[in-house]
Image 1: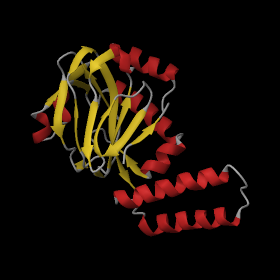
Image 2: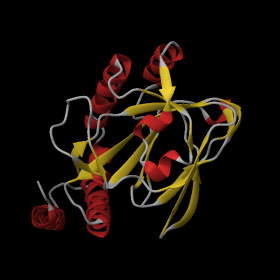
Image 3: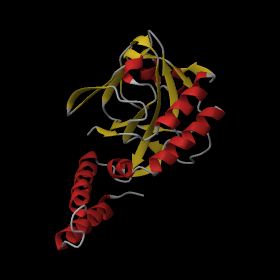
Image 4: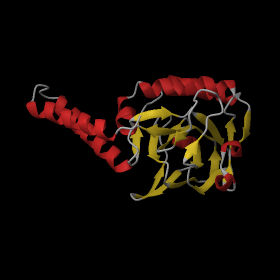
Amino acid sequence: MLTQISEVLTQTQVEQFRTRLRAASWVDGRVTAGHQSAQAKRNLQLAETDALALELGAQVRAALKASTLFFAAALPNVVFPPLFNRYAVGDGFGAHVDNAVRYDRTGQLVQAVRTDLSATLFLSSPDEYDGGELVIEDTFGVQRVKLAAGDLLLYPASSVHRVEPIERGERLASFFWIQSLVRDAGERELLFNLDLAIRKLGSGDADQPALVELTGVYHNLLRRWAQT
């Protein structure tokens, strides 16, 4: 399941991020890549322990907490500290699958994170660069994604995906992983669809007995499937 979440960051926040990142100290993006991914990765990123990465990452996590759609789609248990990357002309990231487990080097998390979901938060507008599409291959087929600055895409970390080479301009983004309360993707999608249906019903008569029953079904399923 691919889920687009619009305006995770406001345009004011996006501009502030971009201003700060222009003066950042970038390093080779392969510093966080696994053995297989390192062979295909050509980009720059902020070091995990970079003070700016920690500051902006905290702002991203705060924005995620304010997004009810993010919570509904991801059912987050642990959000890996957000990282930041930069693709210039000629840069790209060939086909790869994200590591199943990530270890935080910043000291913010004491446990390993199982990567159920991957997330890309776009910080550059689509008209600012050619190429650079996020291409995701999974059971839903092949999807080519290029979102507005401030928008976020959630997708299965188990999927094969790549970033097409940049032909013009520059692509800035934040990326991170989520360990969900519900490990199974099919169960998580069922809960998400049920949540959306409940919200639609709730926009009408909130006292409908069926709405109460459906809400109970949702929470009982979540109670059964959640892993903490």
